Amino acid sequence: WFWFWYCYCDWYCDWYCGGLLVTYRCIESHTMLRLVVIFALLSCALSAVHAFHTTEVPPLVDVPVWSMATLNEDGSTNFNILTYATPVAIMPDRLYCLGLFKKTKSYENFCRERKCVLLLLTDKHIPYVRLLGGKSGKDVDKEAEWAKLGILSDPALTLQEIDDNTSTPKVLPSCAYYLKLSAVGDITDGGESHDLAICKVDEMLLPGDGDYVANSQEYLSTAKLRALGIINEQGRIAE
Image (cartoon, rainbow, N blue to C red):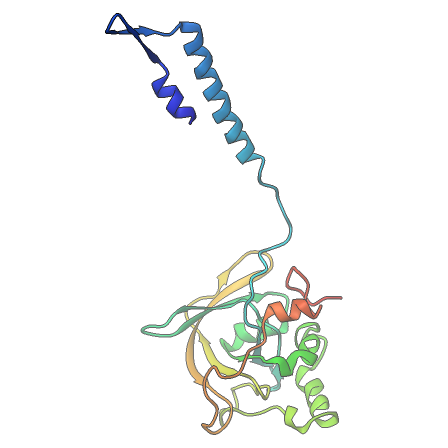
């Protein structure tokens, strides 16, 4: 409406003696209308600028919760919690991009071995998220701690071998998917805290002997862990 009156109110018409008398409106009125329009537009622009504010809370997107199994120097297996795992290509090779926190045992193992197994966790693993992601493999023997859980609570928790290769880490049972990954190219320095690794999916495995249907089991997500108070809005294990 501002532009309508701006464009069409520069002229006005008077019917006089059967003819059309066209005159300019006074210069003062014309200038005033321009100022009103300019002021209105500036007000809208300033309002838009002031509609934003900074925040320390990241977008609370819901992503899958993985555990990355890597091989320690002594041949035992280390586990962590990994949510920075994103598929980036499907052809000619299926590729994943991993965000790896530098100050961890998992990072050291991956950089040395250049391979890992990604385990897509399920609700069955919720009680063990704090062990997997809340403690460092530099301080805790994750394989030994997990073995204690299997012995003391449920034999079904016993760690499993997914192939006969001794350089392949053991895996947690009851996962929705198992992805064997190997690094492609150099690991990219992401700054002070994280590095980025592009990995080729060497093999995708499902639990069971063929009776398990792919994607039939609901996987664990960050939204569920936030709802349970296990991780905070920053994505870290809650105190």
